Every structure is written in structure tokens, then in C-alpha cells.
Length: 124
Image (cartoon, rainbow, N blue to C red; front, side):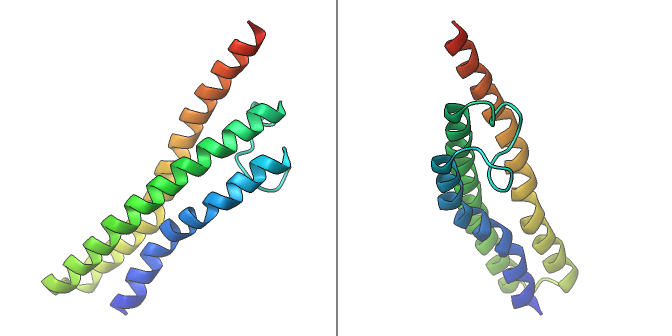
């Protein structure tokens, strides 16, 4: 059961890292309604779309990698300490949801600021 909880907790960060090439590919194929960082501002121009996908890809890769390293360390520590199952469950939920929610919020702030700056620069 503890192995399952560790794997479940680390699945989201691994998927975030795996999404890196998909986000880069989405940037190369232009705005779409199905995949990528999709906001009205990011879909307004081809350059804005590409910029948004590249920034999000970098954020998700970095956050995912850090979460995997910290998560493995946490789960190894829980195993060595003989921690009870509720701690494993809490850690699993934290690593499954924490990096995803944090990086999504971070992407919105970083990408929207960058896109606004690019729009200001283009309008002169």
C-alpha cells in the first residue's frame, strides 16, 4: 500500500515533466482549442501562443523535476522512519496536487505578465 501511495503521489510531477515536449509541440503548431496554455491573450497572436507554451513548458518541467526529487526524498524518509499510513496518504495527496496547482498559478502570473509586456512592446 505504501508503494502505491508513493507512486500515486509522484505520478503528477512525472506527468508534468512529460508534458514539456507536448507544450513545446503545441507552440509550434499554433493556437488550438484542445491543448496548451489557452487564454484569450495567448491565443491572440502566433508569437504570443508560442511564447506562452515555451514559458509554461519550462515552468512545468522545473516544478515537476523538483517535486520528483523532493517527493522521492520524502517517501524514502517516511519508509525509513516507519511512518504510519495517514502520513503516507497526506504526502501522496500533497505531491499529487501541490505541484500541479502551484505551477498552474505560477504559469498564469508569469505568462500573462510576459504576454502583456510583448503586446506593449509591439504596439510601441
